[in-house]
Amino acid sequence: MSPRDTFRFAAGALLRHRLRSLLSLTGVTIGVAAVVLLTALGEGALRYVAGQFEAIGSNLLIVIPGKVETTGGLPGIGGAPNDLTQADATALGAALPTVLRAVPVAVGTDTVSNRERRRQVLILGTTEGLLPARQLTMNRGRFLPPLDEGRGAPVAVLGSTVAQELFPGQDPVGKPIRVGDSRLRVIGVLDSKGTQMGIAVDEVVMVPTPTAMALFNRSSLFRIVLQLAGPGLGEVTEERVLAIMAERHGEEDVTVLTQDSVVGALSGILLALTIALAAIAAVSLSVAGIGIMNVMLVSVSERTSEVGLLKALGAQNRQVLAVFLTEAVLLSGSGGLLGLCLGFLLGRGFTWKWPDFPLAAPPWAIAAAFTTSLVVGAVFGVLPARRATALDPIAAMSRR
Amino acid sequence: MIELDCISRVYHMGGETLRALDSVSEKVLPGEFVALIGPSGSGKSTLLNVIGCLDRPTDGVYSLEGHAVDGFSDDELSRIRRDTFGFIFQSYHLIPRLSAQANVEVPMVFAGVPKAERARRSAEALAAVGLSERAKHRPAELSGGQRQRVAIARATILAPRILLADEPTGNLDSAAGAQVLALLDKLHGQGLTLIMVTHDPKVAARAERVLLLEDGRVAKRLTGAQLAAAGEGPSGR
Ligand SMILES: Nc1ncnc2c1ncn2[C@@H]1O[C@H](COP(=O)(O)OP(=O)(O)OP(=O)(O)O)[C@@H](O)[C@H]1O
Ligand SMILES: [Mg+2]
Image (tube, rainbow over the protein chains, first blue to last red):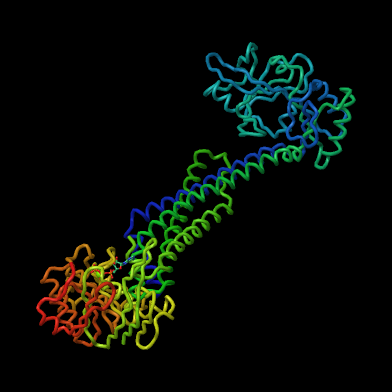
């Protein structure tokens, strides 16, 4: 029996049982597409998170209030640390030659409005230094004034989205806005920059640090961002920062985050995400596998009498098995290919809709999805057929 | 030559044992036409299946052309069925998805006959059973008699030495039955050994030898002429 004849015979059977073939094809297709898409989403999320933290930049240190044990995960709200103040920021900037600038950051949310247009936004209280430290650029106007330990000027810089929503079609620079109960004057608009460190820069309003502290009635900064003078200064600076702060506060009550320490603390979460990904892929694949299995089981048991007949007409067991194997592999293989195509198409659609999300199906998942569908198809195509060929022809023929 | 020596076929069902064949000893010579008759359940089909290597005897020795069959592997049995036997089943057993011609080609597909030759030989075989016009029809689109003729074309396509027919006319009216019997007569005339199960004494009377089975045993051996002379043979149902 030539391979071509085997193929023809198998394809004939598949075409004849169109509905069944279509059903199992769909099962495999959806399973494989699900694996491709889900793992692409997961991998994208991983890259997204990693990208966010890489965006801290290797030349930044972040000082946050509160002491965190070295391996305690992310800093939380533990104990009652001393306030982190603007004076601390100024002192760090002045005392450390390895620090280019020390930028205080305060955070809160409030409603901003331009007459009847209003919107809830994240408000960052900060100074001049944030612009270069974060590699932000101005679209128009100017950024906030330098470190200001006084009352704080009543000025604001808008993220690009906020600017568009409050001042559609207008230049906001020079115009007044309200933040909570205060009136501020817009002095600049940032370039669009997407999301950094979990903060959507386009959707914030930035004000001078004292202004923000007054708005939110806070005494402590959210953090101090230190921009280093060059690479490789992280560790020395971290030690000096801790020493200076211990001296100023009478105890070591701050935590210094570097890119490494943040990514390190997050690696547990990333690992969990990766495992969840693998689990999702495995579940989708087994669903697809069970689909193929059912179809092949039904197909073979319905056709046990055909197996008997073929044997009665002189077909050898391995010829019959080759036919069923070909059928199964044709089904699961084409289902797998279709699934890959569908997955990629859906991915394309997703990327078109959300271009910022780094969607990426990992090669291992693509390979695993396709091979698993093939292997499961082959195994469950051949196993039940083997049972049928093990029968004497007359016993198989009389099965219904 | 077919030699059966004390062949039994026992079915175990729950606690009961059923002797479908009980120590049957018989010889069938090349070129003979043997009819198997007997009441329903007497073991006619079982005997035919054992002879055709579709079933294995529980006891006894079956030798085919001098070789004991029970020593053969599954694949060797398949080869014997392919090279030695042609089967005609009462219920046709055609593959529904295949055309008449494709059904006739199935044994050749598994025997590795090239495509062009398969087409030529199957067309010839269909012509020989008078079905050239119906070559592209599926079994469901054929009458019972036509289906049985397709089955005969399939059974003879690899030029077997022995033709086994289990009530080939059982589902047919007398006209269609006569056509089928005429074909079988012709094949026997060409030298094929023919073993046929039948309920119809008139059909059995065409045979050279008639074996009457009862309860799994050969109860009587007659010649076709003796059966015809008896006017009415013993018949089941
Ligand atoms: N697979 C089986 N399992 C159990 N018993 C069986 C099986 N096949 C046949 N038998 C029994 O063996 C006996 C002989 O069966 P067989 O089919 O040979 O009869 P038969 O002479 O061909 O009858 P009929 O004329 O009705 O076709 C019957 O009693 C039947 O019930
Ligand atoms: Mg019978």
